Amino acid sequence: LWTLGTFVVTAFLAGSITTITKIMPRHKQKPPQPDNYTIALQKALMFFNAQKSGKLPKDNNVTWRGNSCMQDGKGEAGEFYKDLVGGYYDAGDAIKFNFPMSYAMTLLSWSVIEYSAKYEAAGELNHVKELIKWGTDYFLKTFNTSADTIYVMVEQVGSGITGKGSKVHNDHSCWMRPEDIDYQR
Image 1 (tube, one colour):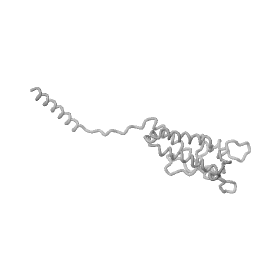
Image 2: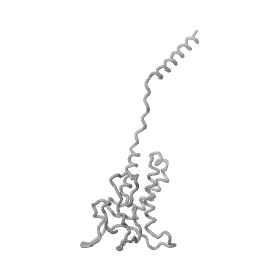
Image 3: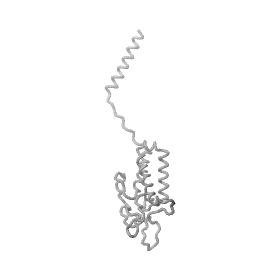
Image 4: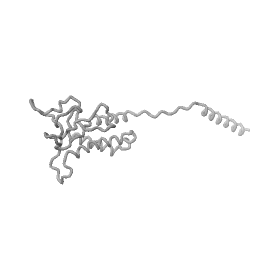
């Protein structure tokens, strides 16, 4: 008799639980909000997009930026001494310094080596690889890649030190949009 009673009570409880779960409305689980680190990573990488020089890709996520300094490397006669279009501006001004830029590309590359799974989880792996490629493609323009020995390398585009009366533009004091720069650099 105890066995029959236990069986009936167990069946009743199981049936009640099943019925309740079937008739209750189902709420879809919302996808988790990105954590603060993911948002910070996205913003940090967006900074690199804002500092790009040259012909910008259509998918650049900084909509207020356009192509800039498309004449970098042109000489007096209008021919390109060396095509120096591309790279990244430094410090919010319009100069491209290769040493800080190379350090930034090295650290980005190192971070991808160490944390590629984290970049992938944040959906930023392809983006950071594109940023590194943008910088390194520019570096390849700064020296003669076909030479056996490298004697000359461009290390800066733009001028930061000019004297009074100089006709050279001081790009450290340039407070205009890079898109509006039309002078030789």
